[in-house]
Length: 463
Image (cartoon, rainbow, N blue to C red; front, side, top):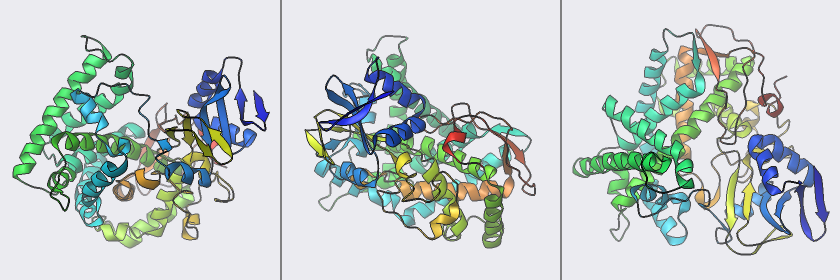
C-alpha cells in the first residue's frame, strides 16, 4: 500500500481498486488495519473518493473529545440502514437516544435517567444473580460449551427480565428470540425495504409486528400495575410540566436498550473469561478475593461493586477488547478536525480500540494488567468503552454491575479453559467469529494457559 502525502491533503492509503478496497481491509481485520493506519499515517487518516476524503479516521483522546462534544458538526448517522419510518419497524428503530439531538435528546435522557439510578439498578441485581445461577445449573452435565453463545443466552434473559419485567419463562424466551432475530435481520432488510412475501424485509416486518404487539400489551399491563423494571419506570417518568414518553417512544427506547445491552455485554463477558483463562495468576487472585469477601454469597451488591481485583479485571478487559471497538459520525457541515478541513457528509471514525492502546496512556498496552487500575484514572476520552459525551451509553452502570455479578457467580461454580488450539478471532462487532469453545472444570481445578490460534494473538500479548 502506498501513501498519499501532501501539505494540502490528509495522509492515507491508496489502492488501485479505490477506497472500497481499503474499507474491505478494515472490515476484514478491524484492529490490525486501524493499527497499520495509525502507525503509518498518524492521528488523522483519510480514504479518498476522487480528490475528497470519503472516510476519515481520527485517533486519540483529543480527537475523541472533539468529535463527541460537537454534535452540530459530527452527527450520528443512519446511512447504513434505510428503513421506512412510517412502519412499526421504523418506529422501533428511529425512536432512540442515539439518534436524537438537541432539546429532544436532553428531555428524553432526563426522563430515562431514573431507570438507571444506582438505587434502581440495585433492584435488578437479584434477577441477574438468579438467572446466572440458573444457567450454571443448566451446564451441570456438560464438559464443554460455546461460551459466547451461552453468554448471549444469559444476557438476553437478563435484558428481557429487567427491561420488561417478564417472569413467565415461555414469554421471556419468545420475546428474547423475537428481538434477537429482528436485530440480525435489520441490515439485510434495509437493502431492499419492499414488503413482498419471502423477502428479508417482509420477514423482518412480520417479526417487528409481533414484537410491537407484545410490548404494547406489556405497557398496558404496567400502566395498571406499576413494577420496578426499566419499562415501568419509563412509563411513569414525567417532566416538571407533566410531559411523558409516548407509546411509540416507549417501544423505541425499549427495543434499543435491549439491542444495545445484551449482545455487547455478552461479548464483554466472553472476553473477560477468555482473558482470565489465559492469565491463571490473575484468575487465582480474583477467586481468592471473591471467596474472602463474599464467602459464597454474591447477593450483596454493595460488596461485589467494591472489590478492587474484580474492578480491575472488568475495566482491563473493556480496555483491551471493548464491546464497541470503533465509533462513527458523519459531518453535518464543513468543519475542521485538528488542522485539517473536512467536507460535509464525510464519514468520521473514532477508535476506542486504538485510544486504549496508546503507550503514553497505558504502559505495556497489549498486556492484560488489571492491577494498573489501582493507580490510573484516565479521562472519559482516554477510556471510553461505553463512548463519551452527550451520547454516552445511558446503561453503562447497569452493564458494569451485570458483568461483575455474572463473573462472581460463574467463578463460584466453574473454571473455564479454552479448548487448545481454538481459533479466536474478533470481528468488528467484537464477537469471536469462530466462537469461544471452552471446557468446564470444577472450581477447585488449577488452570493452565491453553495455546490458541487466530488474530487474537496479534491483538493481545499472551506471552
